[in-house]
Image 1 (cartoon, helix red, strand yellow):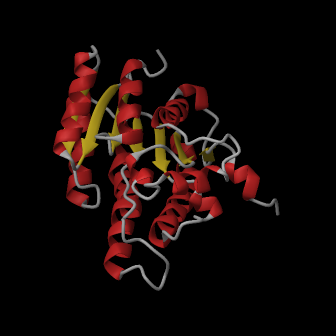
Image 2 (tube, rainbow, N blue to C red; image 1 turned 90 degrees about the vertical axis):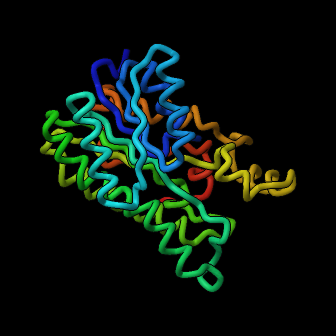
Length: 257
């Protein structure tokens, strides 16, 4: 098993990419700390792992709060003795996120708190734990829009994911000598609740699909498999990357410099 003997903490584990990653990591031998602000979803995630014969613990955390992030890292070490993998995956895309004129300051601040500050706080408290374990892997969920820009106005979300990308690059450089790898996972358009709430008609979905060379939306389980690679020792020479899993959309629209 690819993660045997490792402890993985995954934020946003109650749904989508986080849920699929938690299940997959557990199947591959990891003990999982399933973190979510949604207690029902988080507990169901951990329970599903336990019912499948894996090892998991649910921890409630608002990842935009320093005290909660400190507590979730402490819970990982207290429960399993160490932390090897930190997957800062929790994020939001607010329904009222729009262009610069129409996005409120409140929506901007909330989006950055959940999408960016949470990554900073996870790393602030997680990196010392990874050092104590002798190194490990940090995966931060960014997005293809960090490189491309969104066709539908969602300025706060796009800017926040750009920040995650920049933050991940610098952390990778700073902590390479600590044997800590840091990579930004950049999913393309996925068939998840987060995106489908915007693309709520067949016409809207067709307009988005025409831009994806593979002609379909990705699935959360496909992103989980990419996260598994980044978490595993198979990615031992991979750090500072913008790891795209996007059906070719970025390749089709980004012009080489």
